[in-house]
Length: 597
Image (tube, rainbow, N blue to C red; front, side):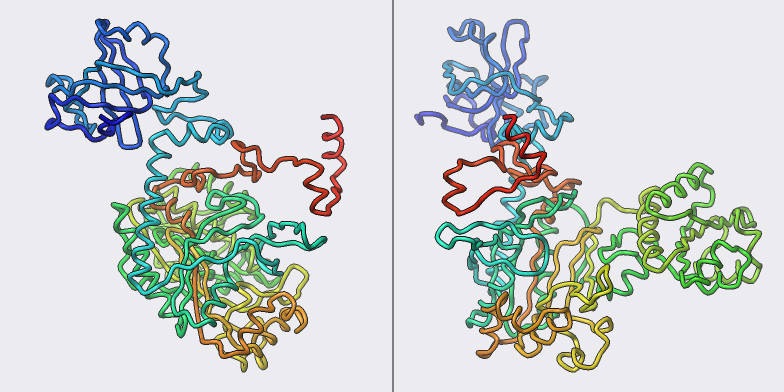
């Protein structure tokens, strides 16, 4: 018999009755039923009920056992009595009558419940992550993660992709988020950077004659946390294709994503091909480049209808160059006054001065602004929104950018409050035709997306078009309002690369020094190539129906980019700093705290 177990805790069935077995696991719960002790023993695979009779010599030690202690039991499998059968458990028809017991690892009093998924302070959970991962919900999320990644590898290999690894220590580049820097001991004053993505390396693989590359790539960015973004590191399904168009990238990704989301969720998944939305259309209709298409509400432009109206608040905005956005919502005219007051408060919370609305109810228009609008304007608005009795139109008036952002937020909030978002579907869309450039806060031209992208009009556009009118072969894949990935057809021409960076304010010397490998490789017969990198963590978050990405990562950092389990980042010995030829220049507050220690 095996030293620790003959079976796992989710394996025994009625066909094992009368067998002598050995099980090892954690004490999930202990129950005393008139002197007979029942223990639910738990391991990675499931639960088995252990029965301990008072006649057993180890019975007296029961009072010292704590939940989460690790115990090994040897005993006989028996049928449960009919009234005790638990149909919720795979092992619910049997139990094991213990004959021997060995304590493998005693547990201290646990800081929070493990057997039950009760609310618990997240900092405490992260500090005791090894206990937290024993909880069923998180444990199952991580099992799901493993299965999804394994299946992704199968699907990518079947599509002709080779899995290859790219460096973790690389050079810093002047784009994207902040780098994590690693000082060099042997090259004083110089630094490696952890890769924000394997961008340059995967392009170099294409120039090296490989045709289809992928990896489950770790990426590192020094950026703030969000519900769908973990600070520090994350993983992505990184891929690149040689001699490929945008459509080739879409075809592969649609196959893989559709298969993964269909296999690992019971929700309805969009048929392929997925919807394609030009960037400008997405912004106009949804106020965002990552729209949740489960929400049927859209924004429309009503600017001209308010240009000469008597409602001065809107007419004044239009006269000063602003716009009026409207959202038509069907069947909500009967909502309470509080509903409309709360929507106004929400709009104000996201930067709006207010939120106008027209409510068609019982054959009349009910609204504080209705008296300022002519019958002709009301009819035109009604036709624009396709509304009738029982419907409502909401309005946001502001500068174009602000109105778009506020209207987008209002659209999302209305969808939630009106129950329009189906929780049982996955709706995908491609956002395409991104602008190549945009203006920064100081009015300077900068890349709006990936600087290595191919302009749709090639060199002719770079030479002759207004930079803000140039579109690129750039694309995002979005699911239920979550951006899974950005990608692009790459600019593989050294001449176009120099010109593209020149427009964004980088001269040839910068390109040669910051991207030496790409610039050099492109001069030796680079093939056209394209790629993308869907976020693995975000995919799992959606599949597990979790609102927070930390619920699908084994050892995440907190919102302040701290690992509370390993106490990272932490202080290091002076000798380590000296070996790296560094001198600390701490903020005064931090320096004072260090001195006090």
